[in-house]
Image (cartoon, rainbow, N blue to C red; front, side, top):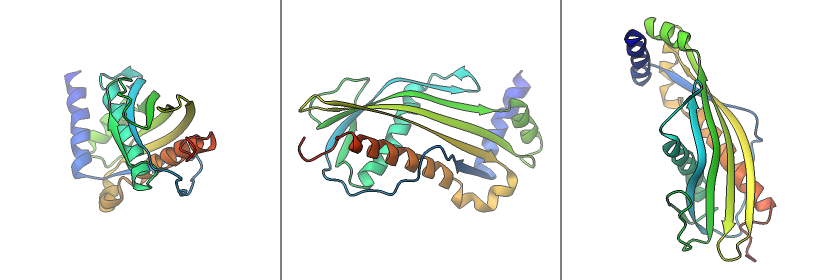
Length: 201
């Protein structure tokens, strides 16, 4: 058992000195950014969110949710969809923002432990793949009017650890960035279609 753990640790250490590549899924449409009507400030929180790897629950559920929120909301801020965002503990909203946003759902990571071990033993000459699925539900509330909106999105991402990807290291996370781009645009534009972020609210 301890030997297997050491091998897995070796694999992930090699990740930083060898090669990896991420690939985004195709569940969501590639939407172009739109021109926002308003750029409100929001408070964001993580609700009932779970994070599993190979079927096992992780103690970092909240942290994983915060990472997703931060990635998505930074893209919103870059596109001027929002002026700024502030994290608050589980739905402990202060009422000082124009909108409250809560993430719930699930993140699942699946891979072959046997392939990870074999890949580690071969120093990544043989590739190892981790497939990640994001099933996210976002609830948005207009603080002033109390109106609520909900949207659900799902997207996949694959991470391949392989020594031959080392020359492509500068482009390793293009797929991960594209995945977050798919999620962020679809979530925002779904809310806009429901009437959120309008000038009349």
